[in-house]
Image (cartoon, one colour):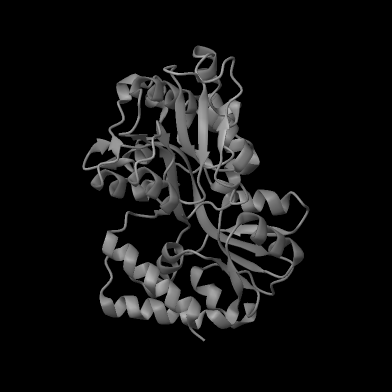
Length: 350
């Protein structure tokens, strides 16, 4: 949805973990529906140590709609890795089991504010794992003036050198925020204004970016000066190439997302799924994730083991960092349909 497509180059595959035995008839196993990259042993080492003979398989998906559609169609999985803003939709479609926090030895280390974003009507359905931002990456050597607001995407001085993420949800939230609207409580007239605002942005656009590699290359080459809706790891990748870039905090705030693990009702062994989840929530696992991707960890104890440069990038030293982040919220089916249609019309407009 809002965070990824950085691993879109990986097709839908099933990967068998390197374990001491292969799956056989009737043998316990785990199936994880996940984003590519999170199958690394270092993230679930504790589970492997405890269950060396339990095979773990992954099915990778490209975006949140695909993951939801797979489970809705009856796909069997023991864990799934969705965005918190999708959890209510999963629950309304009777696809998830509640998380039993009493089975998680690392649960007391999880930030309560992030945990709350995984609840539906007070019931915990998502164990948050990683969180991060949608913000703006800027080529500091290409711009005469640094943007400091989402509204600056429309500034004509950047004409032809702006790119935004090809996401209805991200685009609508940005435009609504610039117009001063509550994105999740808009009237039809306000939605029409959002549509026109996004059409008005088109002269400034080089294009709509669709995957992580693409936008990083465009920023590194200098074709894109202002890359909107990028994630912290975009700065890590481009800055790591020696390119002068800054990941700004817009005046209206950085937009935020939270991802985590949930247990589908198709899970064949909830106890085993909780053990895998507990390993993923451990301090070493979450510190490794934070240091690889420059995302925030839901485990508060991982902060002390996180690269200080990434801590500064994310503003994690600020105790109010979560309160000052504008997190994406759940959409109703009607909102999702309306926003998707609006976005198609915006892109088709001349």
